[in-house]
Image 1 (tube, rainbow, N blue to C red):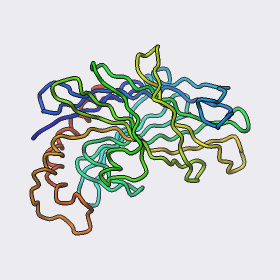
Image 2: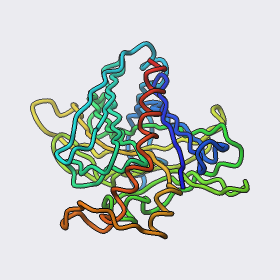
Image 3: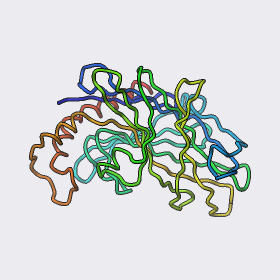
Image 4: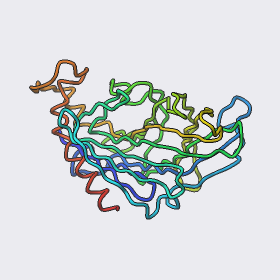
Length: 293
């Protein structure tokens, strides 16, 4: 079975389109926009919903418009080609690095990047306005496909299938059509804040009446390090991807490819075949990104 997905970029927004059957209708579609940075004072139970906002940095098109994209191509030790696309906001507050691969690649974190997804590494470099505040990254989730539902899940698809650990996700499902499918936006429950592994809180998804979509807030704790207590340097690596019908068909009807190393984990028997099936989707993503530059 051949399925297809592509990822496009436009002024701080990353859009994913998925065809459960290649060449057929789009069965899942959503866009993640890096919307803003929110500085807020905790109160009550310390959650974002009870806090008081004291400063807001707008991102999106105003911060990423006409900003160049830097492309880099590398080859993993096992020969898998990996592409990265780096873009920095003109506010200098955030850099986003999108990584896609033409096969299964082990990341420095120990997680596995699959060819059914893209990793979005957020690097935040932000000077806080007041002592005792926290910082949240506001993400806007929208869809142009009718019937899409955004549902918060306690574990991501990657987490459930041993490609990552300790992840949550917003699942983007479409059960209203004749071909139900699912895509997702996932994130680790921990981020590196001023060099320390720190827990990430989430608020949302909550309805945004202006965009017609939803807002998601990833909140980071205040960690004092270095000579400036108000400086926040954060590295967090969410991802967006699809529940691939092609991959599922391999699990249900596995082949026995040769040349698999014995230390590759649970899905080793399916990896070579899956990479061959979905390699074309990476080229689609790359071509679309070139057209958007």
